[in-house]
Length: 119
Length: 379
Image (tube, rainbow over all chains, first blue to last red; front, top):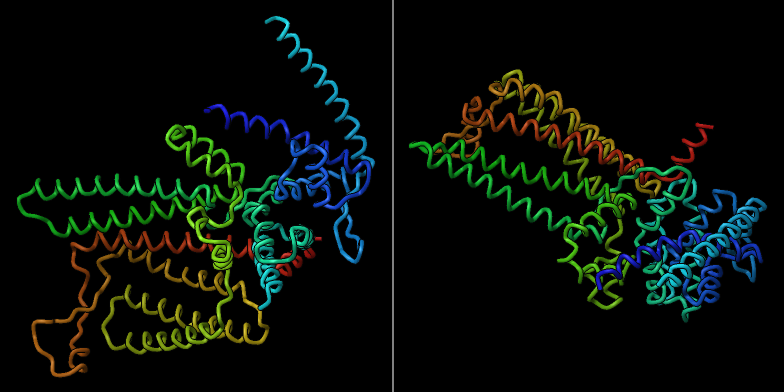
């Protein structure tokens, strides 16, 4: 099917921003380390918003650079891991993201259902 | 070596490779985080074995690709350059070279053919010149393409643009191959090596390491050899009647080998004492090759002053001594002047391009300490 690669591309594009929001949301509940985050994303979304680790760690670094999250090395159970937690700025961004996301869902729903009504 | 030790070695090999491509200021932190990730995940998969570590690092992706994501994600988007073509671009590189070579060979063959048919007397020198031009042309094209592809490989955004562009052009023909790439997105070992079992792949992985440590003994041998060559050049340059251009060449050659000798011996001492590799050696050696540029420029202008050794093979010689003493210097025959001019230009380009490449490599792979020193001085 020739449209499959195009669809994949579309999926990647649409997921990109959502993963950022999901990470911020997960970190707003509690602090987590990279691998833990990756597993949580995968389990909660049943793979829909799973993210490759090679993408996740650079993404975390970017969020850290933007000061949305803060990474800190901690010893837990005798293991040193870098734990991330959300910053006040990150919380604010997350709040705005959620609002935008809700507005998008409502708008898209209207378009999709309106489109169906016309048919 | 135990299974665990082997797994750890593989892990460190991978991390070393990633570190090389990372911006210096974040390298330590990123590598530590990746190390804990690989250990955590492999342990969860059933233990720290070579197989598990290999699986995890394969998921993380090719070191350069992984590191480049960090480079993009940190502050401003920076253009990077590192020699080497990534696995997804490699097939296109081979294909382009293949077709370009075929076109060039056809073009030059047609030109040679026209020389043969157009004139009654076949000019051998012209044919040789065209042939040499073809070889040089193909080599320069391959080199340029290699540099361009390396540049594309070093910058994920540009690489993606290129891949999209190529796929759009050749798309319908390459559907099967595209699918394969999609299924294995971040394969560190090239596709061709995907067939052998994982142990062999691990071996390949290790062999593909960049910047291996050169044993210092090679520096010692190289240094001694260079000094010997410099001595021979200086001694023998007084035995012949050289033109001013060739005398300049002898001086350049002598100085070049003396400096190379000093550097190689210095490197031997440095590596033996500190047990660290010196990153500066290659840069210095390349810089020294710039000593030939003035001579090459002059040789390009005053090509008729170039001399070549000539031995009369029609007569018989009693011993080696007589043979050597019968060597005469003759000026370059006029039919080779064009060829010599072409070669001087080629050599100048090679020296400059090599200089640029070595410098970029040095900047990208310099030890962290050096980068930290620079950062300190900037503060």
